[in-house]
Length: 117
Image (cartoon, rainbow, N blue to C red; front, side):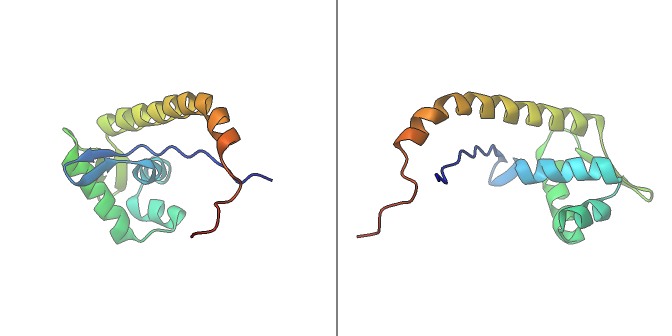
């Protein structure tokens, strides 16, 4: 059985920082669902500190804040909701486009690499 797989990962950079990528998008989804950074972190099995650092990077990289916090919790801003939707749409479009080329690659790809020489 072939173990070949196609994985396309989109990362958007702001200087040396990743402003948006699959993990940050997953975090935004969790914040939107859970209503707090700490609850999102628990769902994703990430520390609160790690989540907070990721949110901080996003808020510093984009023209407008992505996540707003208050004493009641956290929520995506309108800009954050649009950004997340656009990122997910871009992921779907790129995956669909890449999948069209995948059959040619998968036919030429070995099931396992040859031994190192």
